[in-house]
Image 1 (cartoon, rainbow over the protein chains, first blue to last red):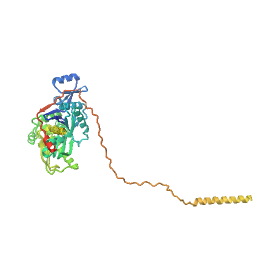
Image 2 (image 1 turned 45 degrees about the vertical axis):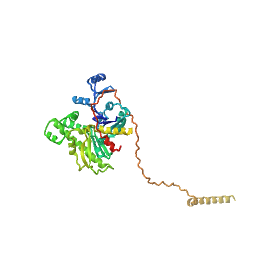
Image 3 (image 1 turned 45 degrees about the horizontal axis):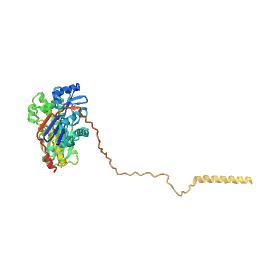
Image 4 (image 1 turned 180 degrees about the horizontal axis):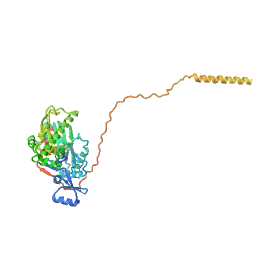
Amino acid sequence: MAKGLDCGTSFYIAATEDTIKKQRNAFLTVDGEVNQVKRMLKRQGIPFVEKANKVHIVGQHAFNYAQIFSTAELRRPMKSGLLNPTEKDSLPVLNAIIGELLGEAKDNETCVYCIPSKPIDVKRETSYHEDVLRTIIEQYGYNVKKIEEAVAIGYEGLVDTQLTGVAISMGAGMCNIAVMYQGMTALSFSVSRGGDWVDENVSMDTGVPQAKVTNIKETSTTLDLSSATYQNIYEEDTDEANVLIAIRSYYGALINYLLTNLKVQFEGVENVPNFPEAVPIVIGGGTALVKGFLDVFNEQFDQDEFPIPISEIVLIEDAHTAVSRGCLSEAQLIEEEDDE
Amino acid sequence: MVREFLFCSLLLWQIGFIVYLLLNKFYQPKKLFTHPSVRPLAVEVDLPKKKIEHVDIEMKKQINTQKPTSSTVKSDEVIKGKVKTQKNKLKKLRGL
């Protein structure tokens, strides 16, 4: 059975034809005598990973603990879309997360995982990141293939326009962009800003801890960035209103950064196709899930400045799992081709 | 007789010495074969310049993925049910 795996900075998401599994990509190291800590965590049903006499709580539980105990340091195996070089204990955790999401392969199953496009604003290669993930997935017996994250979004959102248009994946660590024409990628790149960048800046401006900002962004029922709601709370002088105003400002800055760089890259690259007809922009990824996101995007978008005629700006249905589903489609087609 | 012999001998020696000095100073024998004493210098020519580019090599990285000693990780969220994808449309677009 084919599998698609979205290897995100914030979440790992695996998709098969009948299941989607999500795992928060974070952990927290618990101090104390290893066996005693393990016994305690087992009793409470808290998932953990043990390696080199260290015990790490993994996933949503780690995230929740970091909310409650502000002194607990939430650790992230990935940063800015790539493996976190400062996090020495990340590989066993990633290994366990991938193992749980995919399981052991049966009969040379295909797994397609996503990789980031080359970032334009940091000096980092993506090849080591790609190789580590490939090696881990191969360990579980899969026939492994990779596709660019934004292309996976294109496979979900651009099929009705013959895979022609602009696909944007807005993740926690980075945003990936692909300009596609008839199924081919004319231009792809990433910027190392995403949801984490918004949270970090909101936290610095408002004094609210970053983990709490992330939590508000992901779970708040009152958070709405649409212009009508925004006007209503602008007069308020509460902490929540301050956070909301800051979140909206940084979302605007992030989208502006993305569109400006897309314009510059598009104008700077040779052999980019001409688009005689207007094409859509399709957006996926967890950072685009916040209510009112499209309002902010539309505010920042200026057709007169943009080098491609745009017909519409669309948020893909179930944007959070769009990358994993795009990977799954590719994996299924590879398996079908192999069977023929 | 001996005095005349000595006088003639001295005279001949003097004539011979003077002739040697004069010849040495003014006579340059004509050379039949001339060998150039200095080797001509190489002439610089502009060769067509070819830009030499780097050669990429495939690197076999030794990656230690560090399997955990033990793990009880369970997925945070599991959504059961048919997963909606665009596989069929993609297949059609690729002409498969």
